[in-house]
Image (tube, rainbow, N blue to C red):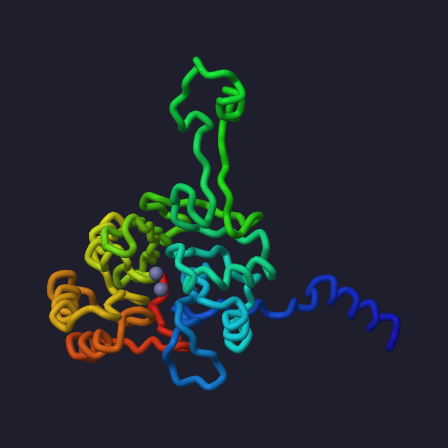
Length: 301
Ligand SMILES: [Zn+2]
Ligand SMILES: [Zn+2]
């Protein structure tokens, strides 16, 4: 190489630096089912519970975490999901079939932000002003809470100490187009259970992810109105697993005819008879969503 061509090469590399490796293209917009008890993929482990990964508008969100941390870890690895790439986690409610995988996520990504329902004295922890109780100043100090001088705030224990929880109990847009919808169950057996659903704004309407729908899917949809006026797609557990046929048929009709939901992709505790009824009601607007399924969404742009 002559001095001249060497100089030219140097000049060229200064003017036109070697292009960096092309950035990884963003994942396609959609929802991947990471945890459920039905599906035909032999490389994944079926178990009762729910977890789904939402990729939309450059954000990656984990909705629920399944029933068993080791099975969750296995499915996450088999589906090549890097838990470091997740922007935040939403835990729909306190039941173990939605929360157990938190133990794995916190091992991999201990500081990840986790949105969870705000409940007093719940498993996700809580805080109350130190003045939350009535006082009696006539008592001697040793009979008074904190000798009569409580701290400004009292924090209550959580099953996951150190986790970066943000408690939510009102409709909250946590990232552009990602809205958490808070409802409370009035159903016997899960009375006063707080549940978060996730509504994602898309050009076709809201995509609504539900964990178990303990407050009832109709109650959840009423609350979702605060996020937008049209529901394009519902995914997740509708909790009709032991509902009688008449109730299942009623709900299927209500979702289609009254709420004008375009598509339905039920999973988890929706139940086998409800899968059948929803498929009958929605026809080609029914989306199969077994374990490992990717349900594509139309992107924001
Ligand atoms: Zn539940
Ligand atoms: Zn459940």
